[in-house]
Image (cartoon, protein in one colour):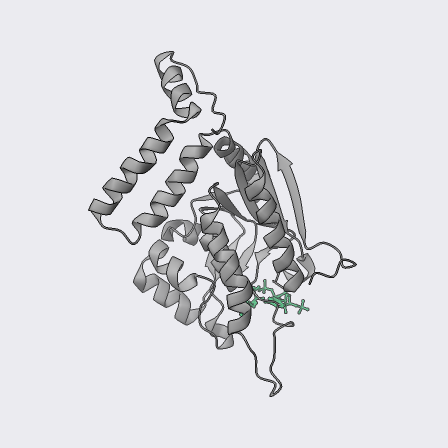
Length: 266
Ligand code: LHQ
């Protein structure tokens, strides 16, 4: 359980349809402990439930995005060896799956270093915008572990098998510019423009056709495991749903009237 006397490890802001969830243990480079897991889960639940939240930004306080598990707080059995699978199943895996099932765009605002499960967290978001000072490191092998929290799944899909293998074996640190070249991030923004740039980008998504965005997210992830016949049918079904939305009606009307559409997200 979260210690209610402890200071919060997650800060939440809301502006222009964008809910910003900031991991806030800057003294530990936003490493995950139990409290951070619990508060992040609650913040994501609230973001999912709130109809006025139409885009979510996940970012970090201080000089890090997130450096994965807090290595000072690892579960140990009576023989002193670490017990890791339970933490993964009960916390990390639940978190990663949650990011995929929330039908709103989730942007990782990678403000600084992303390492270990902190890198996995960024990879599980729908898009990644990085500050030009951000760095990326798999980190697992450097401490004798294997990638987790979805890294085995996401990394090769984003950067290809050979590069994923290299990054996983070497745990070398990758700069933001290199990450952009690799396809690990969508955009790199100058550090002094980063916060405003991320908010601008997210606000643009928050003013979009949210119902269609939710279906796009569902459809794109579904295509990973599906053949063409399946996806053609999925497209037909999702299009039927999108076609009944007010936003579709408004989109076509605005197109014909040669003006910008005003989407309501329904
Ligand atoms: C940290 C951490 C950290 C605590 C930096 N914990 N203090 C899931 C479930 C169950 C179990 C196991 O694993 C997992 C998944 C995982 O996430 S395992 C992977 C965990 N993460 C790492 O191994 C990353 C370890 N950190 C690093 O490699 C470096 O610190 C990076 C590359 C992140 C940053 O390097 P620098 O910018 O050079 O900073 P630094 O190394 O000097 O760190 C600053 C401080 O932060 C330092 O403390 P100190 O008291 O000396 O100032 C570090 O000890 C502390 N720190 N990561 N994960």
